[in-house]
Length: 88
Image (cartoon, rainbow, N blue to C red; front, side):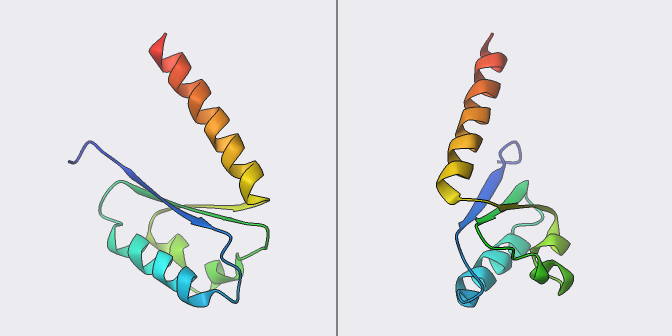
């Protein structure tokens, strides 16, 4: 459905988890023609991949360097607030 969008969440993959990060980036690049946003949440700074042609080259990419639980709670709170406003 061309009206729907997808968010690909990558949670806590550190530099040692290169296979998981590579899989996420490859999947995102394959979906780039769709409405897709890639959100990478990790307590570590993984932005070095950005300079090496990582996921950023393929479209909407958000990197959040923070505690995973804290970040997901904040995203949930913001989305809930947005949906509440949209419903009024």
